[in-house]
Image (cartoon, rainbow, N blue to C red; front, side, top):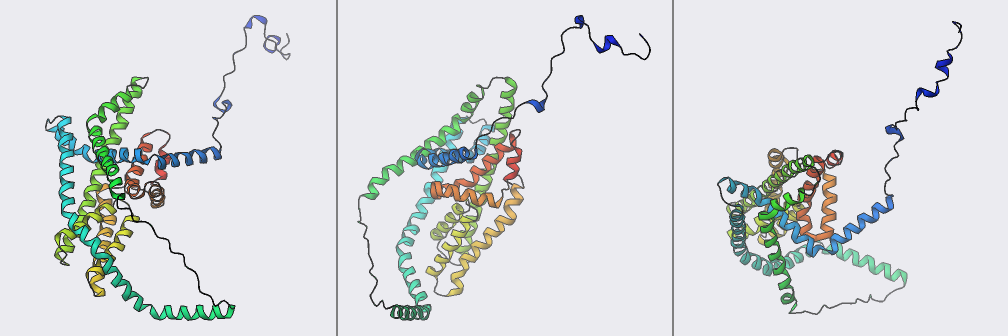
Length: 378
């Protein structure tokens, strides 16, 4: 073979060189995972929404019980450090909560009934005063309508159809057992979640195939449960503080009776669980209370101004300082969640929207590959 000639052996491999090496597929050759069409996703979303609305009689007690269990879990952990058994700790927390709610309800029942009886008469008086203020505008509108009717040649009067709703005296009696059953279901579910929640969680994790996956899942669920319990308890204490401070200001500064001041403080506490929507409703209620209680315009505006100032202080300073940035949510996502859950479940949905959204955010932040969705909610 000459120096410049081709290497025959290298160009043509011999037969005993063995079979060629198998071709290894690169990641680029792996077919992409199929995705569901957009129409299927929309239909699935609508199906889930309809199911949540149709099954609210079952879903709402479970969600309320989980919410109350999250509030009580930090207290139960504190009692466990004092060597109190979990069953007894859960019973003490639940009985204490029911007793506190019962005493508060007993204090609020009389002013709530008085307000419901007095408010319609006072609001009619306020309506008459407002009608006197806008009477010139109404007269001008009536004259314009008469001129337009005469110009069109239609001098007849409009026919109004009045529909009457029969008064059923037994409606309250038929609805009372359902309400009592719902309350008892929430109480029992809350107790069972407090006592058996850890065991149920442990048995569900035991179904995972490997020990490593079980250990990682336990760490994730414990951290999520701990963070959510602290968040729910903290935000509940902050909202209760806002309500107590409002009641104190109404009583000591404006001279409102203690039961009525506690009534408005409790309403403010509950409304504060629904950001933006709750405070807006609270301002309207405070305006109505002011106009019903005082005749002058200046004092009538003071309750709404005080409530708005307390809410602004809490929302802009206290809550961000206590909770930090970990639990912050996007205002747009928050408004959308309030609209969706309020449409699904009414007032209860407004109260549960923020805790549910925080739960979803914390779960997404702990799962690999879904952190981007968690950042989307911030």
